[in-house]
Amino acid sequence: MSEKLEVISLFEIVGDGYCTASEDGDKVYAAITAALRDGRRVRLSFKDVEDLTSAFLNSAVGQLYGKFSEDEIKEGLLPPDDAGKDQLFLLKRVVDRAKEFFKEPDRFKAATKEALGDDSEDED
Amino acid sequence: MKAELSGLIRSTFDGFQALVRLYYQMKACDDPILEIDMSRLTWFDANMCAALGAVLYPFQAGGRAIVPSGMNPRIEEVLQRNGFLLSLGANSTKRADTYRTTIEYRRFERKETQAFKQYVAKHFVGKRLPEMSSALQARFRESISEVFENAVDHSSTKLGIFACGQLFPRQKRLDFSIADRGVGIRANIQRHTELNLSPEEAIAWALDGENTTRPRRAGKPGGLGLKLIRQFIKSNDGRLQIISDAGYGSFGANDVEQETFEAPFPGTVVNIEINTADTSKYYLASEAEEVDPESIF
Image (cartoon, rainbow over all chains, first blue to last red; front, side, top):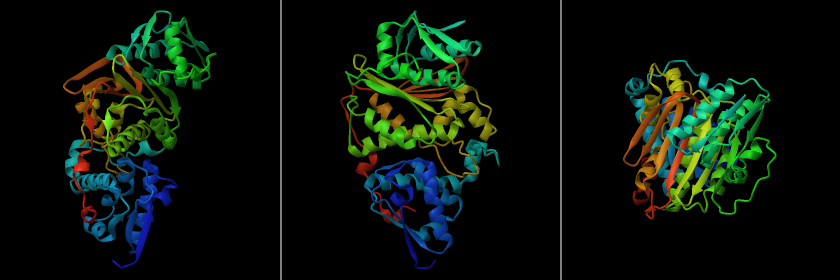
């Protein structure tokens, strides 16, 4: 990993301080993914974020653990900037849950038995 | 043919059962004007307008006129105050919320997350909620928005999301309902898993923090939506009710009630009931706990 750094501002990507919708989280996810693929390290900036939900963070950060290894993420994502105590706590919860979700697919499969390829729910 | 809504409609199994019956009466009727006889209706919990709106809206959207008749003036006043009658296109004005007890009835489009958040921020002020730290207050509102997001994500509905609430000062409770006309929890689980659960089992399954129906393509972990609300409600001695398909689940601090309607409700309703007599002050557990930014990922 090179030392190139990209600060990704949630406020700038979402367009305001309401980081709540999973669709907006997807935009952040796309930005992080592009940066990591490009060999840049990423620092997420929570500056001016007023509201934050786990739905947003699941999309923005949680799903990274399905795309990259834990080591790659640890290496590529620097500690976030300007995150409040509660925002850090929520981020940590989402990350811990995502690691569990993607690390133990069998356990989750047993629990959810998700049908492969059935993605019609997201189509409309 | 007239449909009828009668008796006491409260946020209970019987109340929701009455809305299920209303739905099937209306569905069986082909008239362009659907009259609902309310002359024998003696009480209507205003938050139930979310579920009622979810029942009625598709008929309206299909070009049918919904005409409530014989309504008790006290009920009419409540339904005017929260804007429900206006939404039916009834010859109605919207009364001022003099007592500050109303969380107005609204239908939101799927994309209106921001509008929903503003609505929650506006209407949850001054509703006698137990004292909360500002961090918890923010998280509480976010959690309510997550219920909305979950309804959008999981319901596959294009008919929108319906919300309404009411503070009942004498009964010392605040009820807030979010309803959708989606496929329901049971069908959603069946669609994404191989589990064929009963409607009540499906509700219990969805409430388990470990379970999720997030589509595999999206590959997002989920399931955090109701966790904080449930924890809060447990401490607050409130109640969380989930109505989906033919299943009814009511989850209190120390009791769980699960029943089956005589026919499926055409969607899902989440009703959050807060005990406003609670004098405790609430904080987030995280407020007593430091998270090291260096060790998050």
